[in-house]
Image (tube, rainbow, N blue to C red; front, side, top):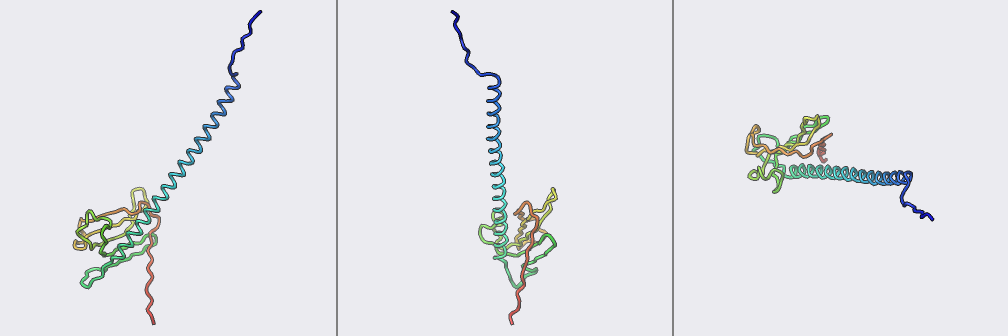
Length: 166
């Protein structure tokens, strides 16, 4: 009598089918992971931009809060130039402790502060804050330059004039 031996194993169509199913599962996991990664990057980018905008607004607000009006001035303490796309704001201000540039200009609490937009090499605009001590000349090289917003599409400041009371 002959002994019958069965060999255990998978046929080629079974192996191909299982590899195809496994590949589809891996592809779905990878696409979900890539979607989550893109969503995380875009949300962190949006959060970073929102924080930069808040910090820029805070810097402008603090500079305007400390605007200095004094009798023996040689220049206006507040200048506002409005252009079609970008405004320029120049203020003479007594800045609060901890204001931007304190490491370089801590000895000078009263400063000329300008908020201007500059064009970068990549033809985009950025919002820049320039600070100079009040006691130096306008062409002084002691300028503290801070890029508040690296990409600005529009920077407009609108001022309402006070209406005289009757």
